[in-house]
Amino acid sequence: MHDGDTRALVIGVDGGGSGCRARLADAEGRVLGCGRAGPAAVRLGVDRAMAAVEQACRAALIDAGLPDRVLGNADAAVGLAGLRRKGAIEQLMARRHPFRSVRYFDDATIACIGAHGGGDGGIVIVGTGSVGIAMVDGREIRVGGYGFPISDEGSGADLGLRAIRLALRASDGRAPATPFTREVMSRFRDDAYEAVSWMDGATATDYATFAPLVMQHARDGDPAARRILGAASEHIGALVRQLIERGAPRIALLGGLAAAMEPWLPPDVQSLLSPSQGDAVDGALALARRAAERN
Image (tube, rainbow, N blue to C red; front, side, top):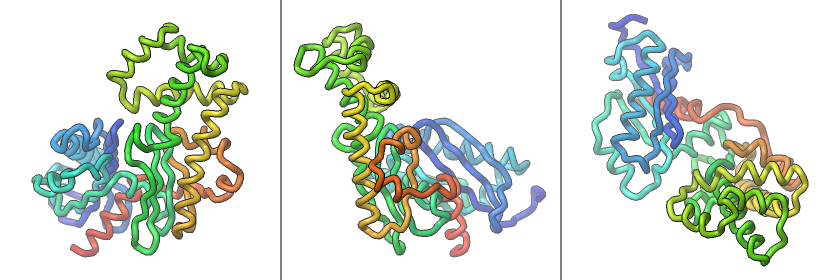
């Protein structure tokens, strides 16, 4: 392809809180280039999020050996973390963009479509947060995922919150102390008011840093850690079961804690899980191709 080529292109973008990935393909689905950029979550502000999206797209063009102006030939589908925040989609639609066309989606939506090759199915994401989402007969079904601390049960942040609560109870004698609760308190120099001070500025990501500690001690047989992880697995299992009950034919478990959580899920839930067929950028590309076919 040369600089004057006006062939239609598609771009799929996955914009998350830890980074942004873009993939450029031709209309037949052949991947031409890939690019990355910094965080693109809507909570960072629409302008900052879209600056990262466009940077990742231009990096994909460089990878493909194409000039910036070729973006004007591309139909884009952009998945963004936090898109459901009030006013976000209106701000995005009002913003100028360099593409031939662009459509915006929640990042969980593109992950779901990618996981099932564009077909019907559901995903349960277990990372810093948690959510269940499915596509069934063209309808999107969403369960949970309203944000920590009011929701996101079974997530890394939720594990951390439960760990600190239990450690505080153990530290003043309201629950049995174990190696796990003692290690949690050691993070705060065995001072409950250090935990209180930490809490004042802690984010969901900060709470989630305690999740590996829960996992480690649960594997080592610590009863307190096992109780926390057992409760979390029931919450994740409930998301899976609810999506199945509402018509999802298959469920994939995704997210940074998915592999660690899966062995702790109830056996009936494990039997409902299927491997993911693709990633979130694959889902965005599938949506971009549908837009290109309509344009």
